[in-house]
Amino acid sequence: MAKKEKEKKTDASEFKEQLFMKRRNTGLAMSDSDIAKADKFCEDYKKFLDTGKTEREACAEAIRLAERSGFVPFDKNAQYKAGDRVYLCNRGKSVILAVIGKKPVENGVNLVAAHIDSPRIDLKQNPLYENEGIAYFKTHYYGGIKKYQWPVTPLALHGVIYKADGSRVDVKVGEDEGDPVLVITDILPHLADEQYKRPAPKLIQGEELNILIGSRPFRDDKASETVKLNIMKILNEKYGIVESDFISAELECVPAYKAKDVGFDRSMVGAYGQDDRVCAYTALSAILAIKGAPDKTAVTVLTDKEEIGSVGATGMSSFFFENTVAKMMTSLGKDSFSATRRCLANSSMLSSDVSAGYDPLYADVYEKRSSAFLSCGLAFNKFTGSRGKSGSNDANAEYVAKVRRIMDDANVSFQFCELGKVDVGGGGTIAYIMAKYCMNVIDSGVPVLSMHAPYEVSSKADVYEAYKGYRAFLINA
Ligand code: MN
Ligand code: MN
Image 1 (cartoon, rainbow, N blue to C red):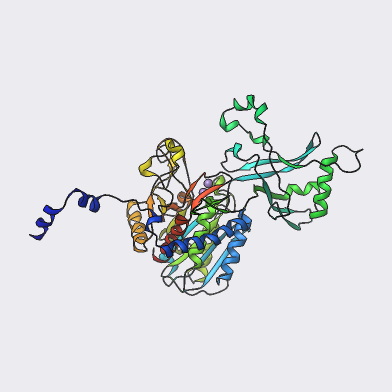
Image 2: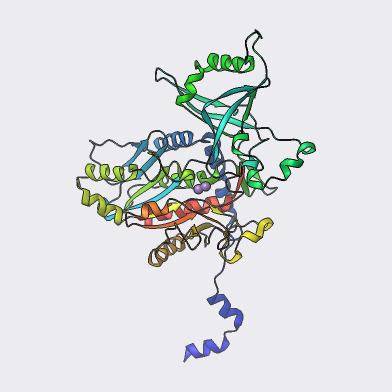
């Protein structure tokens, strides 16, 4: 028998070739033209990062790009047909984009969802004060930060202020070449003996994250708090605000620097807020790239508040997504609660969020066989969570098999991983929130170094593979 003949000839290396899993280095597997495509893609990605440093800005930029690509605001009175491109925005902080498919929406949608909020330093509602001739903003940090990473780095202030009359002022200071920046100070090493004795999580404490904003007193020095007065006067002249307007403001301090290439080989992107705007941008680009009408309706969701538990009206736990599906069903002539439920249960989702890139400098926290390596492609997490997968979605094997096949067919480099070693820590995503609709969900994303730091690093090869993977999923799932 021919088969037996073949077995005789097969040696260990050939068996190994057939049987062992290979981790594919995307960098090696990519052709020169693919590398050029990835580099080009990341030029636009860096622009997106610089333009959208807050959830509001990222949302607005996503909508601008979508409109350029033929998407129009969803109109509940319109009748939609396959190939139509629509979007719905929620309070300027989250957006759902859809390309209507040929099959009835009841059959489910292919959904990629990422978040556009990132860890940062928010101003309190009574932020402005003066202490010993120096003016500061009081802050309350947002999301899981290592607080000691945020002092002595130039910060920009982004956000909105609503005045007592309801009018809106947009704020963005620290981004333009001529702009001043803000900063949180730290103790000099010469006097840090006591500070060094603090455990790392308390090295800088929450109430010490006060932002330095001024030191020049108002000319008339007879009054008290003249530095604060001078600052308030400047803000009044520039924005027309008074101190009480901070009450109805959302002001966010983010690193003032721009996205840059990292490494002599320019293989990586360094920037603030890549968790999770790297998945947001790739998921957005993937839906914009769809031509004509896909089989199933393709949906990209860019959501807010993931970093603080997906809560609030603009977080994934709100009914925005469900309401949007219901609205779409209505405009497609399927106005019933059960049709909406059927659509949700028949849907397939990639919960798209960054994964911890394996960092050889801190190898102790990773389990190498299940780590997401830089430049090895889109990272899938079958489960997330902590302490025995607690809080995780844990995708069905049947669904994992389907997703694998889609990635293989589209020649996408991917890897299966988890965050770190068992019981070392953990984390969650929005996956479980959507899984409650009984839809298939799996976590996928780009591996990132220094996640949640003011400066995160990703691999351009992975960014491009994520885009390819999301596009393949939206069209073929
Ligand atoms: Mn994230
Ligand atoms: Mn995060």
